[in-house]
Image (cartoon, rainbow, N blue to C red; front, side, top):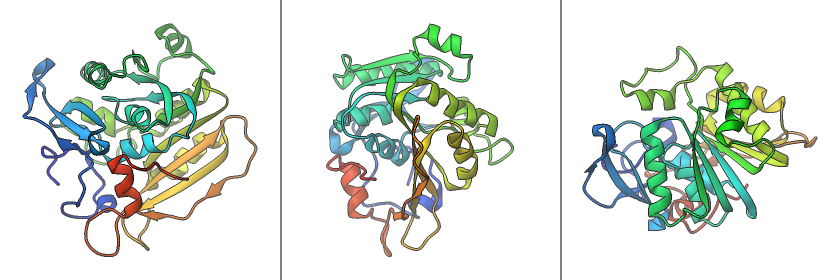
Length: 287
């Protein structure tokens, strides 16, 4: 699917299948407009038009991972923290779906921050969402000074960079490269930051490639209990390509591995009814 046509995060081909799907994750609403730093942006509709977001036409673009992350937020969440929020897709999806009352979006890239602030305002969510300029890998004291409080959030969500050091091909665009590449030590720091920010009994949810599950579980196991793993596969019987991992701060419950859920059926490239409903904004992720 051409990246310039629909608002898609650069995908793992095995996850989405080949060719076009029957339901785009996001649809362009208007012609591209010029933005700061000579970026060209598009205005895209998510959740069947319930949410519209500005994002770069090229480079890193929000897609299925971000929507699923927002849909995975538990009902009744008072406040959700989105680490490395980009233009804000996951957290704003959680707000638009009614999963959370308020959200805090944390991002370090200046251009993404500007777009996130614009997206909050344009969707009428200024009273429910804050945007913080912050590199979450800095020291805890610096995070607190920037306004990211400890033990303060019911739910912390993240879609961390997903290639380990030395793996994959680095993108020429700097922001896209930052969004795709991170070493194992940095992944551990992301999870540590999530644990520090989560309230007592709070929840952390991360979406990540299945090949990185071992490193992610190692980081979770040191800080969370009641870990639940939901594998996502492209088709029935295929190997998982993505995983959603959820953990609860202070829990001693054992790890639970759920059955893999296919995104597509045996034939064609359309999403299964479960995921099509989530993309349309008429259902949430039940797990």
